[in-house]
Each structure stands twice: as C-alpha cells, then as structure tokens.
Image 1 (cartoon, protein in one colour):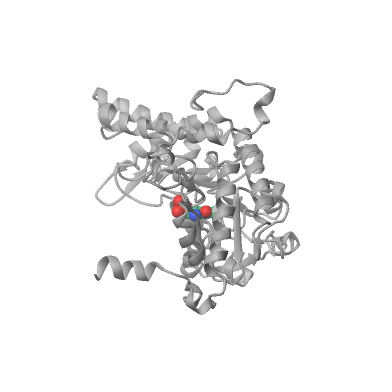
Image 2 (cartoon, rainbow, N blue to C red):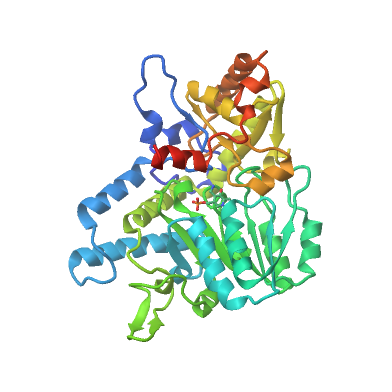
Length: 451
Ligand code: PMP
C-alpha cells in the first residue's frame, strides 16, 4: 500500500509506521545503484528532509497547470494560483491548530520567521534596558536575530543553560523569569541534542512573568503533533523543507492580536492598503507581512507535504521515531568509544542522535560513512554556544525520520565499525582533528567566488 493514502482511523493510530513502506514513496531513496553500491541510508533529515513523489508532483502540476502571480489578477489562472496558495495556508493552519489561517504568515523558513518577530514585534514593543531571554541550546537562527535587536535597541539579555544531559536548567529559567523579561525564545526540540523541551509549561511560566513566548518549531513540527492553542504559543516558527516540503517554504504562526498590532517587517507590493506619495497604510494580516511575490509553488508543495504527513498521522510519525531512536541508542552501544550527547532517556528525545567516537573528528567519521553510502551531518549544526557548553567544536549527528528503518540503523553501526578499523592505530593528527571545524563558510566562499 502506498502511504500516500490515509491510514484508516483505527485503534492502531498510535502504532509505529513501516519505514520501508514509507521509503518507497521517496524517489531519491530509490535511485538505481552503481555496481557494488549500497542503497543510500539518509540520516540527515534534521538538516533537510527528502521529498515524497506526491510533493514533487504537486509542485510540477502547479507549474504545469496553474502558475500565475497571485492576489492581483482577475483571470482564471491567477485566481486558481491564489486559491492554491491560500489552500496551502489553510492546511498549515489546521496542521498546527491555529484559530484562523490569518495567523499563519508564509515565509521562506524558520530563520525568516524569527527575524520577522524580532524586527516587527521587537522594534515596536521593546525599549532600552528591557530583558530578552533565550537558551544555550538554540540554533543560530534563534540567537543572532536577538543579538541584532539587542544591539539596535540596547536590550539586556539572559540565557538559560543546559545540564549534563543536555536538558534546560529550569531552575535557572524560573530565576530569570523573576527578573520580568519582555520576551523569551526557545526551541521546542534541539537540532543538536534531540532534547524535547517542556514548552507548554515554559510558555505558561513566561506568561505568568509577563513575557511573550517565541517557539522555534523547526525540529518539532516535522515530527510530532503541534497544537498552538494548547501550547498557548505567541509565535511559532517552522521550515517546510524539514517536513517533507520544498526549500523556500515555511510559516510563522502568531496570535492574531499580536500580529494586528505589529508594524510590517518589509515594505513593498501586496502588503499595502493604500500608498500615497508621502505615506502608506497597511493591509490586514497575513498580507501585511507578505511583501512582494511569495514562493507560491513552494508553499503549494508544503501543502502537499502536510497532506502526506496527515495521511501518515503525526502520532504514528512520532511513535515511529521513538522506536527507531530507541533501537539506535541500543545498537550504537556496540561501537567502542562512542559517547552520546543529549538525554539518555530515548523517550525524552527526538529522532536526533549526536555522538563522538573517541577523539576522531566528526568530518573524518562522516567521510568514511559516506563511502558506505550513509549520509550523516558533522559540524557544529549552527549551535556554536551549545558546542562550547559540551566542550567540543563539532559532533557527528544521525537524524531519523519517517523513511528510516532498523536496517538503516544496522548499516550505520556497521559503517561505524569500519570507521574504527580505518582509524585504528593512526595518530589523530593525521585526521581532520587537526582542523578547527572542517570546511566552513569562509572556505566555501573562497572556493566558489575567488576560484
Ligand atoms: N531552528 C532549528 C532548531 C533548526 O534545526 C534549524 C535548521 N537546522 C533552524 C532553526 C533554521 O532553519 P532554516 O535554515 O530552515 O531557517
């Protein structure tokens, strides 16, 4: 059976998925192999997930039959394109249980969503000396926008640190809240550790202290059911490309009253009510925050990804990941000198497993894994403050999703044994450990732009 069909609503709803059946829906995971090549084991979904055929088809169908600029034309194609875009917005709103699609601003990714909050809400509502809070485990996209804003407005910052198991220090959080911050921002699920934070309680505590709460859902929306009303989140950001949708699609959820009261983030076409030579009045939300031509085809693709995830059932997606990760944490124990980062309790973490292998550099590990056609990520995962807290410059990260199976875990374990064989006896100075953190942005830029 293709998983693109909705599983019947039965008592089995909480049962795990069959990753092998799901995998069949993803053409990139089923490409013809070269002689002797093993099938790809893709363990980098936390960076970006693969796309099922239904998403690729939805985008190709949009461009083949529907494409036109939206919201402006009064001809059939433009109206159809507008309807396709707004339909995707409705799907996203339902997926996260927003009260209204108007509360969902379509953006390119989580980074853009958080910058929007910082620049639009932050500029209008914060003043010199106000306190803002974020945590040590944030992705740079939930740190740097606050640094920019803090420098612009002369704000004070406080940071929640992690404990030995990579969980937030909630006593410190409570202590910081007593200092009456105006805004707290935290990730729902850590992209580097897999830690699942108690966000509902953290939001309630923030509200009790008089702060608004911004949730980075980049690593949770793809993996577990999200209910923004139940969480009572003020803002919540997600990226389409991590949840089986295309790059260039994403959403910012915001409570309608907050969005209504905020000034726009960017100015231009589509976000206006009236433009005079000397001033402009704004359109209602969500248009007020969607200046310029949006990524219509990508958003349509995200809508198809949401249909697909709904058909799988997010409760089963989460159950599947629990099972694969529990199996992985167990099976990986077999690899000598492996050390895990993040909570030891498999039930308290997402499908992300970060680890170190002796003193081998993560780039060396991932290079050998690549020879086995096992794709993992090595680096700081855009969480440099977190790496500092862990006392490392980088980790190797395997991240699991709907299409991963126990067999994928077995392939990872087998390949890691080979990594041990390859490097046994070699001094670590002959490995990439001598490099600070492997190829970095500056090196790529030099290669790309300066020859
Ligand atoms: N937050 C978290 C927790 C993430 O994992 C990522 C992506 N790695 C981001 C934010 C940024 O997502 P994007 O690059 O899609 O904006």
